[in-house]
Image (cartoon, rainbow, N blue to C red; front, side):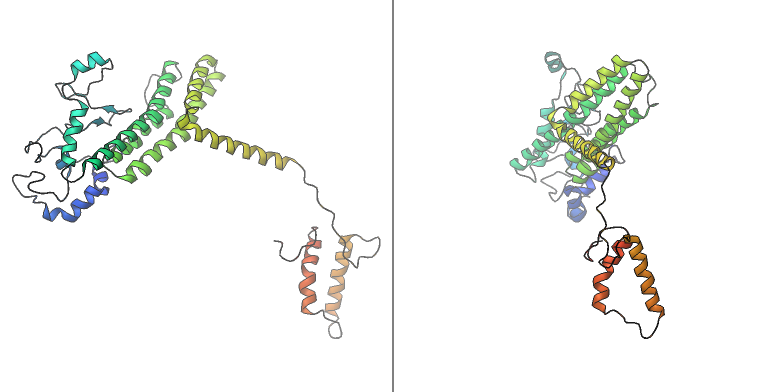
Length: 345
């Protein structure tokens, strides 16, 4: 009953992870048919989904939960990940005022994190467990701050400035934003949470970045361009100002530099094509008669060679070295280019 698919591929992520590999290798030694199945007592070879999220272990007295989110410290379902402080009904607390929020929290994200660490510690050292969670937290914060929050601000401002219709998913940028957080963004965060590098990077943050830089930003710019043409210059200016401020941040600086280098290279190429290139004069062959052009000389030589060939026996044939030395020169003259050394291609 595990989740799978493009927006929450927990099953595929688990199968790629070291945990999934260990399970496939060692499942015959995991006492799976035992009525009582406690981590650290009945098995230690590898974890399943239930091991980490629901099953009992020796550090929690074998207590089982039917809430798969009880040990999860981040919720990665929304566009922007949130810490998993939950209320008495198990719902994520979204109140932002610290005092009000504290009064609503029944099970904090720190409590959830500690319960998960109890599971991890059956197989891993404390340093390893803490380092993993530090890396995971940094990954989620990077996604939130670099792509999710800026993307949502752009979409919200486009809507607030009436540059989007009130109907959802009738404009391409709405689909782009949806794929960014709902598909690529979720895959990235879930991949990091379960240690599946391909899902964290290639199916995750790589595609998040591509969608953000190559689609979302250009589409938003195109909308503001059309808005100016339609007399909505003030609205367009506000959106462009927001985009400029986002791309000016240090984490996006590399993209702007690369874009400038590409633009400069394109401009230089255009300028180089526009400047006429002077052709160097063609040197006449050594045996060109006075007053003859190189073309005439070349034609004359060819006719002479043809006559010599047709003369048959009795005609003096040049040796192989003469042919090898003169051929590049003859070819270059026929093509109207300076004589080469035989290696110019």
